[in-house]
Amino acid sequence: MHLFDDYKLAKTSTLIRVETREDNHLAAVRLAQQCMRNLEIISRDLDPSIYDTPDFVDAVKQLALKSRFAKIRILVFEPETIAHHGHRLIDLARHLSSYIELRKASNENKDYNEALLIADETGFLHRDSTERYEGKLNFNDKRQSKYLLHQFEAMWETGTPDPNLRGLTI
Image (cartoon, rainbow, N blue to C red):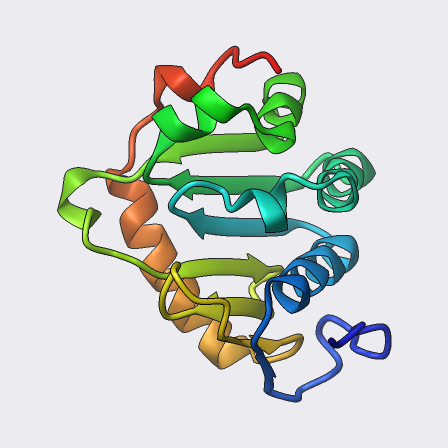
């Protein structure tokens, strides 16, 4: 298990292999904690073990509150599942809707089965398959982050707001 305490967004350029649920969670928290402006997430069901935790939700909340220019965009595929189970991040988005926007991925992207988090167009956490926790993490790879952000943008543009993600209460 990595703690990622020594890794700094926009400074540490080491490609790190993550292999466990806990590593993914800690990496997502560290990236969100260090993020200053833009956070993008693609997740089929907003993996609760990574994104529905008090420390991750607090990091996103702090990001939204520390800058009026903060923008958090989340793209999901299974809003019905998220709504059925409840999710802290969705509840936060309802309260901070000026900073956090959620969309459902379009049907044309239904076969996309990766998980992605991009922080400030610089750091990323990327898994090739949502069924496994093996992935790549880098706190300072602008080139790869821009490439992944381009994929995110294309999917974001075709995504739509979903009523299951609005007004969800826990």
